[in-house]
Length: 325
Image 1 (cartoon, rainbow, N blue to C red):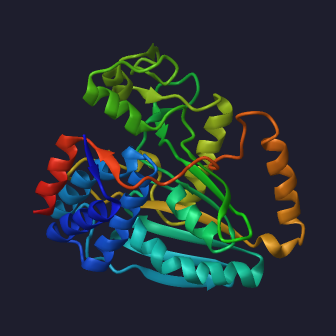
Image 2: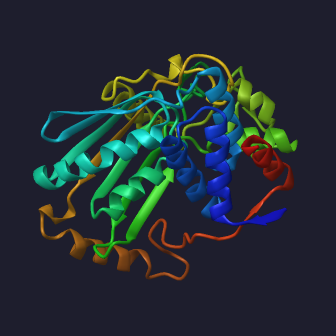
């Protein structure tokens, strides 16, 4: 393991992306997201994805020079066409007009269509909260989840993220979670490490519980809370695809496959002005106090702190250096 500074992670990531075909400003936006993921130990959404980004830039599965197009068809609705490019620059172009619309109307939506996977959804809702707004986001992904009791893949892990401002420029609450028991990346990492997975994470191709990550990848993941998580996953599916013009999960090829059609995914965000009722921050304080009254309890996201430098596995850092040239 090596201790690597966040600045170096961001710089090497941007260099690698530029070297494989991304324009500098687009590479910078993606590199900033990789840096943020690594800073809080979110390995699945950090450097772990860099090789895939570079491979897909070369094959054209993601368009590294695509300039996002922003429109506002309604006063409270901002839409961004990512044009089969990365989600991060598309969000960067859309967040300012969406925030302005939320303050003008009390609530606004930001729909990003025809985008590459956004990896860490909470990275985006946190940016909404740091602008003083409540952020709710959802997206879909390649199909890996069957209906409870079934075995045919219908939807992706379809995460939902929620970020709440504290009224002083910080974050009072944040969660970012898949609607499955575990994220797909944890299965692929277990397979790479040659380890078993806990029972209850996945079923095999015949719909039977399995602890074999390879069998899990050939089968499907289990929705968190059974039908409850399945319903949340379906909600994310309909909004992420239907409100953005992106495709449904069943039309998405494996996200890290080097070749194939663009992901064409959608990310759908709601931005809400907490000052609308005049009571939000008072109620937030009451709930936060109640949530923290027992030892070891807290609001989600309260113990998350950024680290710098961070530990990076030697083989992974060697790969990053090679990609960056």
